Length: 112
Image (cartoon, rainbow, N blue to C red; front, side, top):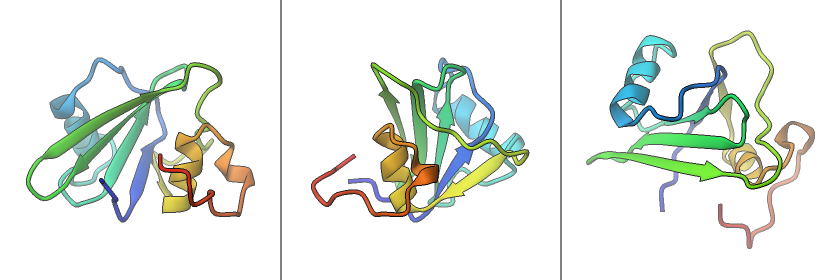
């Protein structure tokens, strides 16, 4: 299982047709970070019903996608280009829950 120490959200929506190379370039140019630093980088589409996660695991790059069939992912409203999440906030976000209103940890049986 992929368990990044840090998850960074790219605040602005991106074109979901972008792959590993295109999103890595976004991490470098727009977010001013190194895509191979061990952190995970999450991107959303304009409708906020799809996210892509880019992560370097030490030997290669993973690109994962999640789509909600109903509702949308709650994304922070900020003027910054990135937003750091804790692992608990990441679990709530990927479950489609408004993680900004919660302080509790997700249930142990949730494996997102």
